[in-house]
Amino acid sequence: MSALQTETGTILAADIGGSYIRMTAMVSSSPSHPADRTIRRRTPTEDADVFLATIEDIVAELATDDQQDAPLAIAVAASINPDTGVTTTANIPCLNGSAPGRILSARLGRPVLLLNDADAFALAEAAIGAGRNHRVVFGAVLGTGIGGGLVVDGRVVRGASGIAGEWGHGPVANQRPTRLGRSLPRMRCGCGQVGCADTFGGARGLERLHLALGHEAADSRAIIDGWKSGRSDTALTAEVWAEMLAEPLALALNTTGASIVPVGGGLGSERDLMALLDREVRARILPRDAPGPVVVPGMLKGNAGLIGAAILGRQSLEIGQ
View 1 (cartoon, rainbow, N blue to C red):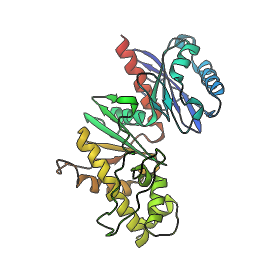
View 2: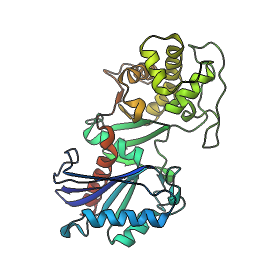
View 3: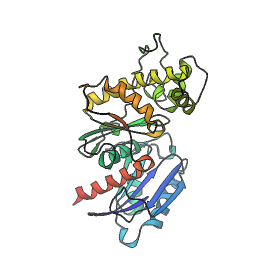
View 4: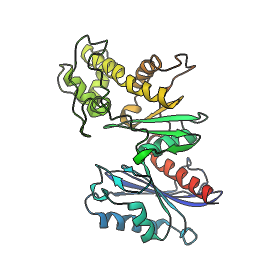
């Protein structure tokens, strides 16, 4: 959680994942400045009362006397319905079906804003990261699975049910990539559909794709290292992965008009892999004469969620003036 001083007031911000709640108190007016104080606690995932009490304890510990009315902005690993505030999350099941923002607001006596963590990543990268100076930014997260967020003119587009930017789901898998010359099975996704990009695009998806190509089981790190060292089996996996993933990503860019794709998550930090994906995407977007890379590693690393939450809070204060 961060206490962020801005020109319009003070903001508390938090980044909450399935494992940890990250909290920090900032003294600078810029969300990109290092924190003077950082606290990390485990996220209570099974008991909603314990979860809410943990957030209350952190706010009580960090908020100073002049910050008692400051809004709390939270980036969380969940989808949030923008109309009802109801959340859906696999990582923090105790929040499913509830509106934690409204509950926390009543308990804390301050405005509480919730933002999906992929949206927070996209907002942060659009404001001060790899998407700076781009009007339309599509933030992609390639971690264990796939996530995404869309930012237009510095504002997150949430869409119906808060799912704008979720490009990882939908039956899009190409069963016969040109580099392969034979058909691949379309894998069933946890969302209930078959052939989603999430089934082959994230770290676990890369591992499933490697198996589907007839290779021995390997983790994503070993596959990428093997590709970099020139091994033929892992090279095929990387090339097929880039071709297959470039198709839905290029469609997302053609649909939204985004001119840049900052990528977060573990795979997003692999510069060579992102260069391979960028090459495949630029061959499929319109127009095809992009002056430079379109798919690029995000610049803000693990701080993007916290920074995105802080920016959301600042925007809420500006709107409220």
